Each structure stands twice: as structure tokens, then as C-alpha cells.
Amino acid sequence: MKRIVQAEKDSERALLEAQQEIAQIRKDLPNRIAEMRDKILKNAANQRERELVEAERAGSAEAERIATDGRKHLEELSNIPEARRKQAVEKAIHLILS
Amino acid sequence: MEKLVEDIIKESTTRSQEIRKQGLAGVEQSIREAQDYATREADQIAGGTRTETSAVRNRLTSREKQNVRLAYLAEKNRIVDEVLDDVKARLRDFTQDESSYRSFLVKTIARGLEATPSENVKVCLSKRDAQRFKDTKLLEEALTLAQVKKKIRFSDEPITTVGGAALVSEDGKICTDCTFEAKLTQLQPQLLAEISRILFA
Image (cartoon, rainbow over all chains, first blue to last red; front, side, top):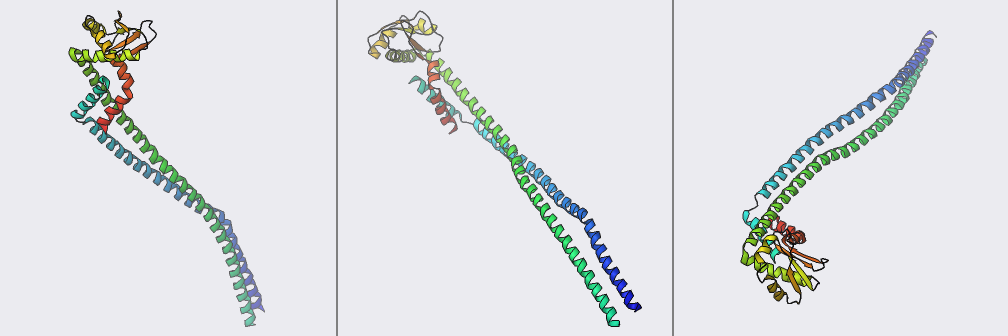
């Protein structure tokens, strides 16, 4: 009889422990969720920062390439052969005097 | 007796496991839902980031493209202006060549006569041209070339021009401007197009 009573007591304690364990987990749940959420959003924010920095770098490199090409085209303009300039002057004179 | 104790312990173990299992299932469900929600938010941030990065690149490149385009156009304009300055210098030189210029002036005045709907026309020249051509048969030659019956005379008032002539009706109401300056203005679109075509094609 004694052993039965003890088994009942152990049984109740085990159930109580299980309930307390779950209650504690539930109690910790908001913090756990908040931590997890923070982690996910922080990762997204870090990724955003990295991508923006990369976009700045890539944009600056592209802008530099455009500027270099532009300078090359300007140089080509200043190297127009004298013969073509003379041809343009002749054509203009012809139009005005004709 | 032994069996009863075993059953109590077994039942207790089963119920405890059941409590844990149900409790954990609920917790995991809550975590999954929260995770899904946070992931959706993160996806929104990622979507916004793509727009932002694209805007950053566009801002940097389009600003440079515009600078390059403006510099290129400014350089082209400078070169075209240089050519136009050369053209004006050539026109000034042309007026020094009396024989060629006189012939041009006759044709110009003849065209001006045809274009001026007035019986009496004054021909206005620059001070220098007036001095050079006043005592010549310039107007008679122009009349002959134009084949019109009009009365023409030199104006007493000189005009400011590199070359060419302006024809004014006697009452001053009609003026046909055949000076180089007027031609340059009139032909400007065509001149710019031709010069650009030759230089930059």
C-alpha cells in the first residue's frame, strides 16, 4: 500500500514538473521570439547595408568608367583633322555666297 | 501489487510526455509563425534594398552621364564656334578681293531687287563699300542682271556690315537684308547642320 501511495506521489510530481517545464518554456517564449526576430531583421539590415555599400562602389566604378570614356571622346573631338575643319569652312562659305 | 505500481508509473510517464509534447508543439507553432512573419519583414527589407541599390547606382551613373554629355556638347559647340569664326574671317577676306566681291555684290543687289516689292529702292552699303563702289556702275549692272524696271540709288546712310547690301524701299517700309550677317542668321540652322555633319559624322 505504501508503495502505491509513493507511486501516486511520484506520478503527480512528474506531471507537475512537466507542466512547470512547459509553463517556463511558454514564459520564455516572447523573449525567444523577440530574439529570433531581432536576429532575422538584423541580418536583413546588415545585408541591406552591405548591398548599399556595394552599390555605391559599383556605381562609383561605373561613373568613373563613363567619365574616362567621356574624356576619351573629348580627346577625339580635339583631334579633328585640320582638313575636315577646312572642308566645313568651305562648305559654309559656299552656302553663304551661293 | 507490483503490477499496479508499474501501471501508475507508466501512466504518469505517458501523461508527462503528452503534456511536454503538446506544450512544445504549441511553442514550436508560435515560433514558426513568428519566424514566418519576421522572414516576410526581412523579405520586404530585401525588396526595398534592391530598389535602393538600383537608385544609388542610377544616381551616380546618370549624374556622370549628364556631366559627360554636357562637356561633350560644350566642346562641340566650341569647335563649331571656332569654325564659324573662321567663316567670318574668310568673309572679311573675301570682301578684300575687289573683283570677286564686286561680282558677288552685283548678284546680291540683283536678288535683293527681285525680292523688294517697290519701284524705288535705296541700296545701303557699308561705309567702306560705299566709298569703293559709289562711282562705279554697280547698280546699273545689278539692274541689268535682275532684269527689272526699278529706280535705284545708293543710300546716303551707310550700314554696319562686313559685306553685302541691304535694300530699302524709298518710303523705308520694306527692307531686304542681304548682308553677310543676315545670311549667317538666316542660314544658321543649315550651317550648323552642315558643319556638324562634316566635323562629327
